[in-house]
Image 1 (tube, helix red, strand yellow):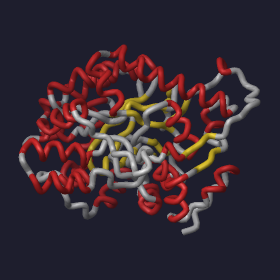
Image 2 (cartoon, rainbow, N blue to C red):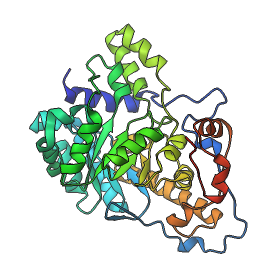
Image 3 (cartoon, rainbow, N blue to C red):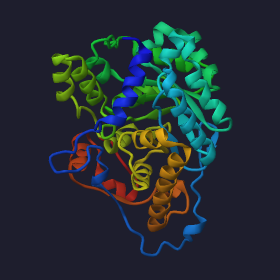
Length: 370
């Protein structure tokens, strides 16, 4: 099957099927956000009308700490979706990423489904997207084509080896990826974001990514779209019993997003994606250490209806974020990053077993012991 055909299959399955990570045995979301409590400030001493949500990321100013995360492109039928999402990003003054540009690098006829994003969002922060497994194949020249294609302000290198391991056509040779990432960071004309796609990033890999020269990390944690789940549905359609079995078994594989934010907060900006479903989740992510949040699946349905629906959904999240900031007594996103929080349940247990002193969050002096 062609890369282009897989892209439209993936998009349609995200619309038609329940592809999210399953809730855990306690009925809480796999992302871990339900285990995070922001500490209420009964005397906020600020005016909710005067909050500042503006954020600066890789040299660009955003009106809110939200990105429309990488979703689609690479098939003619995805062009309208990308146009709608890009129009919403431009209207709201936020950032947007495109789906994997592999299909367009392989077939220039697919470029228009990506170029439309810059056409509709001439002033927005836009980042491109190529898989780590394709870096050696495409080389710097191929990645520069991807940058030029959308006038990218940055390039995301995505890590999707869970999905690749389940796809019969997947690329499962992960050798040399870190060295290839380092080469791209050294030579590409724009900053590099290294992003997971639903299985999260642990501390040691986050440090290796930092050392390789990446400008930001997108944790892509467990809790949002399960690409093992998406591949399970694809396997069912073609009667592939083996891939269906493996997909079901690994549906919830990965590091929860809340945990992955803490694991990845080292020295470069962190983007929280993976189950971000509300402005409250955005607030919790920033309090845990992220700089921005990426939203994908909640916008797919609205994007098929029109730009207004996407804008309305994002404006709801932004208002939820405003309320959370007000109730924490935080006037700016920077202040929100230093607000008090409490970590409960499985997320606390997970972090403590990984060597983090969760109680230290009350004083914002997180320590990693391993």
